[in-house]
Figure 1 (spheres, helix red, strand yellow):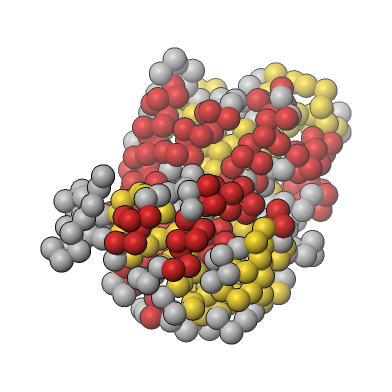
Figure 2: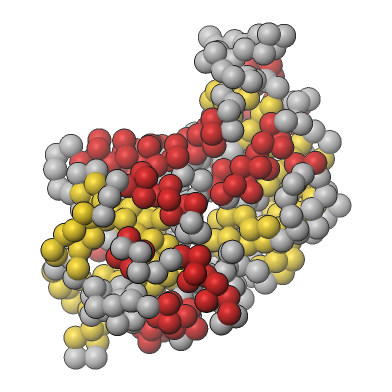
Length: 251
Length: 210
């Protein structure tokens, strides 16, 4: 049986791991390669690296980091953050990334999804969507959730699927950093609406939140950062708990 | 040109146990396979050179992406006629395995015909692509030595091989299908052993030690 995935997310700035609370106030949580290898050993199903640095050397630094991760880590990983061209993707995949995640660049240039899917295959194209619920309606936000758009979450999700995205990584800006649980209603609606896997992101605080994201939110995978980085939740313990709730996990 | 000496078991990189070639035809995440092999203490070279491929002890045929464009790339280098004639153990991974079949529904692609079966798309009663860790069972090959029934492997695919006589492992996703195949010296795995943690590495090791 296909299992639900637990995905630690490592925010990277200038080659180091950081985690933002509501995307600001960054704290250092270690060396990405060591952290990644540790997670791979301790039950993570997959990893996401999100590069939030904005330097000119970014592309080179990131490619080097990806190469080091691929050398050490024997589980799949996705790389995202500022990816906007076929060339960016090619460099990262050739360095050993399994998938890339695109966000703002897909909103600005939706055709990029089609291009990447036909050139590299849908399986390596994750479209990340940051959205915020305003007066009951979910709107897509850009640049790490800072810039609002008029695009509606569910319309956009449908469109990215049709354009060839292999997965959707949905982050609720209302929940991110709160540790109050995932946006389960929106997740469930997304999961029902599209026929590609949905990764839940934003709001993980307790083990129960993961259970809820899989049962109520019908998510295929759940992503979190600080609860894992600061050892608040151990992934093996979490998976045992999920298994007790009859959620299929790899143990 | 890189040429290694089989008698002395030396790879062009001065490798440890030598003789592994990963077919490099511009389709897929070959870096990860190369690193996984390195973690096992072997050196692999990437090559699209028929002489190097023919001289290898073991050949790995990777592949990620879309079937018809991958097949085009194989044809452009003449590898489509070479691969079916290889005599040493050959391991097709993911799309590599699919291209070793007779026909792929994806892009209406004629395969290499090593495995006598067609590759078809998953029904819409499941999410497509299947992405994640699923179990392999009914294991029937020396490449699964030390692997327990229902071990988890990482899979990413939209097309699958139906159950058939050449199946050496099965997996369930909506239906039960063949997740690994063997025909003589040709092996194919739908999952990614190089991305499937320690159990995946064990399968790669078993293959390299055939």
